[in-house]
Length: 113
Image (cartoon, rainbow, N blue to C red; front, side):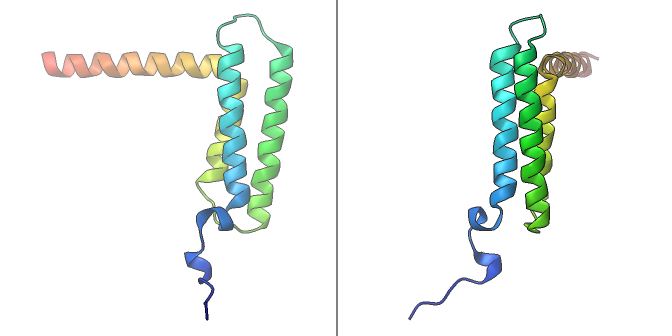
């Protein structure tokens, strides 16, 4: 005789499918935008359209996660953030580089002074 696991002990992938899908779509759209759009400086409207479709797909998966009450409070917001960041991937990369250089400068000055 086997007993079923209680609701809180079921595996994560069984309980939070839509949240995981929202995060995966956002992550894939960010990586695709990073590979496709970062090396070029001219705007690529096809890639921008694909990024917009990825944002819409991520929002749909996040809404499904909310309607199913999956309690995936960390997964779908990160997926939405990554999908939106994929639209502005060049600015995100530049901002990360500037903040990293600033943090390195503060660290160096902290040890010197």
